[in-house]
Length: 247
Image (cartoon, rainbow, N blue to C red; front, side, top):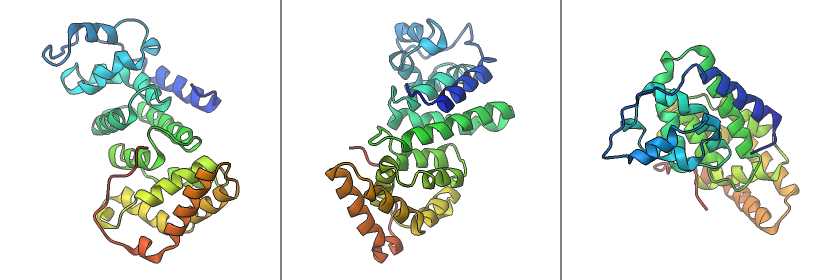
């Protein structure tokens, strides 16, 4: 677990806010999808003590396991496990975010605010380390496409980390993986597209390159900067690939 006090505070607030949702006494689970012992494992012990092994079966089968009450009960722990990379973010991240966004228009403001605060710290945790299992481009897609949040404050936070090698290497991943303008009808995509074509990515790459601590990081950042500086790269219009790349 990160020692970042802001992250710890955000997670504590998330748990406190959602503590109004106890685990239902009776939960209907498809017994063809989930063995009883896995259900018991996810219902045994305090929420904050449940590990990924106990909760991944719920994440994989959330549509046939209980209902909204179960989801809101488990949500703080699921988010924490994603932020700390104890759970498979590539699979669980989009599912969790998509389900939350599909229902949270009916949630109280404090619940939505607590989730958004946790997502903001998730973003900063991601930018502060490289590699991450779920890289910044992929998380940005989850933030925009699944959570349906405005990417502007997340991009601004990225710019604030100029000079940090990890943040710059995440920019390099974005430059390598971003494709075209076709998805511009989505507001989040258009915002990222415009940011990528502006001066911020090059500044982050150059300042990261100046402080690169390994030959590999230097090669990655230099190659991404060369690619970003090609007019063809920024003007190309092709079908977009899914953001992110898993090393």
